[in-house]
Image (cartoon, rainbow, N blue to C red; front, side, top):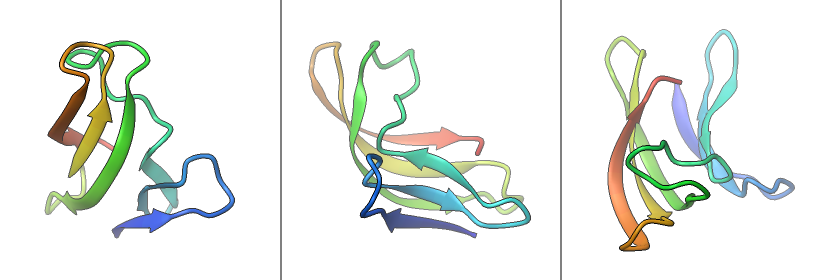
Length: 82
């Protein structure tokens, strides 16, 4: 199961978490977006709900990023292997 949670006592503030045999964070706000296509020191501004593949091997989510490469504000659908 993959869920989006808001964290009160953390610097991450919110993120996507996977709960199965080994619970872990898939993506949190303090993670750096993948480079390329995003520049170094880019960061997530917001992370939306996620969808998982039927096999659970990949997740996709919508995120807003503050990028160091122009234009500075970007929105994208990202896919990752948690």
